[in-house]
Length: 85
Image (cartoon, rainbow, N blue to C red; front, side):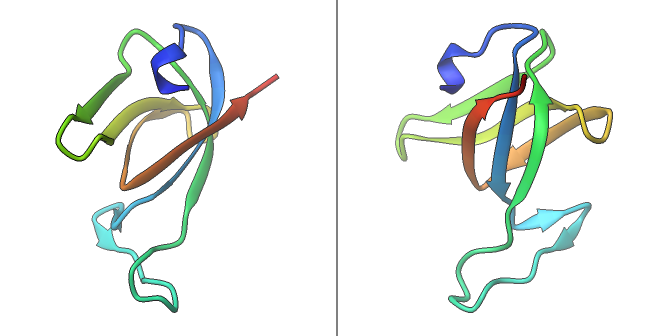
């Protein structure tokens, strides 16, 4: 779905970062993953992605956060699940 985002399109993004606001995120019981962050987002002309062809995954996505009113960078495991009405 990331490849199909258009400027102005709103969506839900969920990701599991290793750090948040410069602080390490605590891991869950499996000691591998962290708690997820879910935000309402919008794709703008300033949004960017970095796709790693070796691992075949997105390393980061810069998006406009509608909940916090600013640009954020999603890292780690990333899901884009639906459009916001």
